[in-house]
Every structure is written in structure tokens, then in C-alpha cells.
Amino acid sequence: MSFTINKIDHVQLAMPKGMEGDARRFYGEILGFEEIEKPESLGKRGGVWFSNGAVHLHLGVEEPFVPAKKAHPAFEVHRIEDFKRYLSSQALEYTVDENLPGANRIYVSDPFGNRLEFLEWV
Image 1: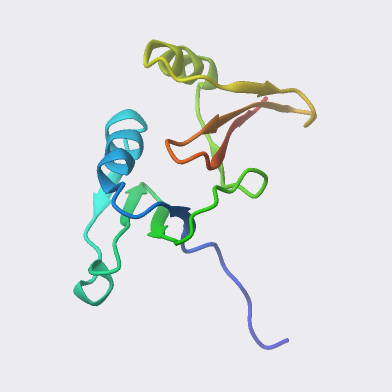
Image 2: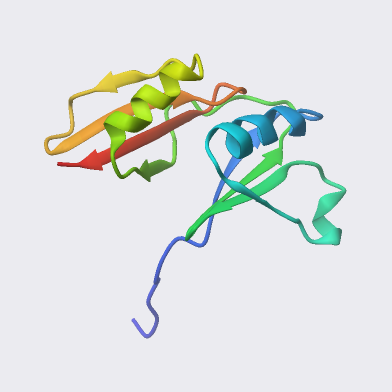
């Protein structure tokens, strides 16, 4: 092959129409992502884009909306035990998964029911 795929540019998750405020509260205020302004040509479609360092996450409106219950992005977290305590302090539930050797891993659902994985390699 004469080409290489270097990295993932962004991950997109679906969200229901008109729920951008919920996305901003969860991803922005709770998880600490920074909102990125969408290009004008895409802004009228709804949804919202976020980044946190090199991690880029786009939420796009999908109708009819069906949450991703199995497919999911996985975010590597430094000091995941602190992150778990933080989630609990925000009254956010998470599920511990011990099935991946060498990983301290949890799952969280966003406000729309999409599955998110957070892990720290130990």
C-alpha cells in the first residue's frame, strides 16, 4: 500500500434533535470537554462538537435516534479512581468492567443512552 492511516481524527456519536443543551452540560460542564464551533455549513444540522486535548468528539443529530449501546468510544483516563469519585459526586452512575486484563475500566451512559468507556492501563 502507498498510504497509511495515522490516527483517528474524531469520533461521532448520535444524539436526539434539540438536545444540544444536555450535550453541553454533560460533555462540557461535567466531563470538561471544550466546545468547538461547527462550520457554518454544518451548524444548521444541529448537534455539537467538543475537544479535550487531542480527543475530538462530534455529536450529530440523528432521526430517528437510537443510542449506541454496544459500539462506543473509549477514553484513556489518568487517575481513573479520582475520576470514579468525581462521577459519584456528580450523581453519575458507572459500571465497572474487569474483563480486559491490565485495564481499570468503566462504562458510563451519556444523557442520550450512548455507551462511553473510560479506562486506565495499570
